[in-house]
Image (cartoon, rainbow, N blue to C red):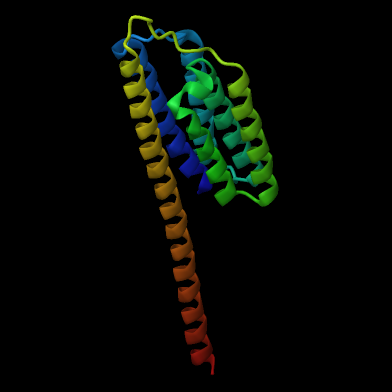
Length: 196
């Protein structure tokens, strides 16, 4: 169940990242190194197809370790995309928080701390080295600032949407579990009444 949620989130992420790359490169005319970006999204898509196969066709039983591996893949893929699109200067850099939020909610504390340390290392590495965006010097400074602020707004709204939907999903799962427990207790009570 947890991995199917990861599968759908990754589908949204791959689609959104593809749209963002296309928009920046072709609409904003900011040249991006398309080969590593497309290659990263392709590998992430293959990982997602493999995850879908494991979930829906192989009868695979999910484990905390496998979920941690999937979130690690997401962290590395997003870091690679950010590396080639401005690093720490990319307004979407804070999307690195999403796999960490998911790990904190889905995984035991040891895995969550390990992913937190990895996320911190990857974020720090983006501060030290990245490929800057090749914004034309002919572009007015205000244009760059407005797009950056717009990017931050989109990043905030997207992060908020994903976090709220994820927490709502978890709350729904808790309510379902509680409802099943109540039904089981009622059934047990009725059976005890019949036997008495």
